[in-house]
Each structure stands twice: as C-alpha cells, then as structure tokens.
Length: 255
Ligand code: NAP
Picture 1: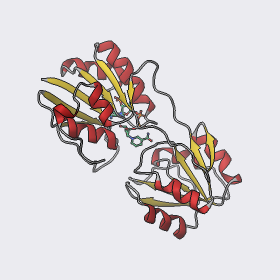
Picture 2: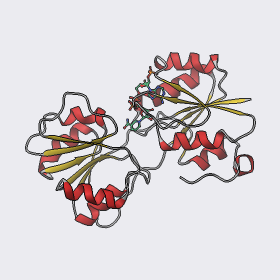
Picture 3: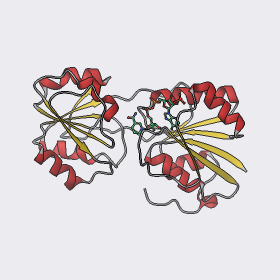
C-alpha cells in the first residue's frame, strides 16, 4: 500500500482525498488543523490537530510510513507549508504542493494590491466607509484600530478578540453564489471589499459583484511557497504527478 498524507483544510484537499480513496493500492490520510468545529470530512483516514512543528511532522511521516506528502493547505497557511518542506526533507519523503491559482483582474476591476492585512487596514479608510472583510477570523485583529469604517466581517467561526469596535459579523461558509453575494453587498450597503488572493471559484462571485457595482477591492497578495517545491494547480494535476490518472481512479468527480 502506498500511503499519501494530505495536509488539507481546503476544497482541493478534500477533493483529492475523494479521488485517492478510489485508487487501488493507496492509503490516504487527510490532516486538518482543527480550526473549524464541524469540518467537512473527506473519505479515507482523517487526523486532526498540529503535529508539533516540522520535527513532529517528520516523526509522523516516518512512523506512519508515508510515501508522499501533499501540501494542499490554503495559499495563506504559511507556517504549515514551511513545516511540510522541512519535514519532507528530513524524513526523505516526496513532497507535492497543490495550490489553486490566484485570481486575475479583468476589465472593470478596481483592485488595490497590498502585501499584508496590516497594509490593507491602513489603506482602507481612503477607499470606503462600509467594508466587507473576507480575510478570515484570524486576520480580524489587523483591523482592530481602523477608524471611520463600518466593517462587515464574514467567517466560518465567530472571531476572537481583539475585535474592531464598529463591526458586524456574518457567520457563513462558502461556496457563495452570485445572487447571495449581491444581497450581502446590498443589505450591508458595502462600498469596498477586502480579501486575500485565495483564488478558486467558490469565493470568486464577490469579486464579480464588486465589479458590477464599480467598487474598489483591496487584495492581499499571496505569500510564496518554500523554494523548489513541485506545485500543481488542481486535483487532476496532482493525480497526474502521483501517477494516478483517470485510468486508475476513473473520471474525476465534479468540483
Ligand atoms: P498555519 O498558520 O500555516 O499553521 C499554524 C499551525 O497549525 C501549523 O504549524 C500546524 O501546527 C497547524 N496546522 C496548520 N494546518 C494544518 C493541517 N492541515 N494539519 C495539521 N496541522 C496543521 O495555518 P493557518 O493559516 O492557521 O491555517 C490552518 C488550516 O486552515 C490549514 O489547514 C489551512 O489549509 C486552513 N485554511 C487556512 C486559511 C487561511 O487563510 N490561512 C483559509 C482557509 C483554510 P504544528 O506546527 O503543531 O504542526
């Protein structure tokens, strides 16, 4: 049995586990950080919680005889990707990164690119008075001292303090559809959007709504992956790299 460990917490990680669970001769384990109280669980084995740094992950890889480590974590989950690169090198395990491509602007977009949430917070008051923040609950602290802007923050779980004073929290989990996004912008009278460049279709409709309304969008650029990690953009690419194309797992299910 080949043992593949997927570092997940993303749609792509779950979709890859679904495909690998169909492959003969493959044991698949998905690892989740445990940030979400009721995660959507992939098929195959699942473990939850940190490994205790790169050394802990390297120990886990050796102990569980992992052949390939797939880093399918979110493009902004920097710590775990760094640990994955170090641990794979230490344990002598093959590493593959699965990263959905970032978004690209199209005509009509009014994007303002920044390098961090802190830069986004500093730039925000000049761009609008009512902001939809889709940067995740962990990033909300960066906006704690923003003044003169009403913040509407969307997250899966309630955010922890310190929280901005002028805040509405919307608890919901994607995918988000175009009409629902239009309703959010309308109901909350949003005049600026703040997002990370997460990429992917599931959360892209908010960008289309901002474009329709001619609103500015503050976009936090992605951090890079550690040097030299082979990277694929989608599940089909990952299966190909793993030598498990459609001949082995059959047609790939819908996204
Ligand atoms: P992070 O800052 O890169 O990781 C912090 C620590 O959390 C890691 O050192 C590791 O702990 C643990 N960890 C992270 N991902 C893990 C995984 N898949 N399995 C086991 N342990 C994991 O990560 P983050 O930005 O907090 O993201 C946490 C998880 O949420 C990731 O799995 C990511 O895919 C998902 N996610 C993140 C974002 C985002 O915007 N950052 C958005 C959507 C989903 P140890 O050092 O103890 O091993």
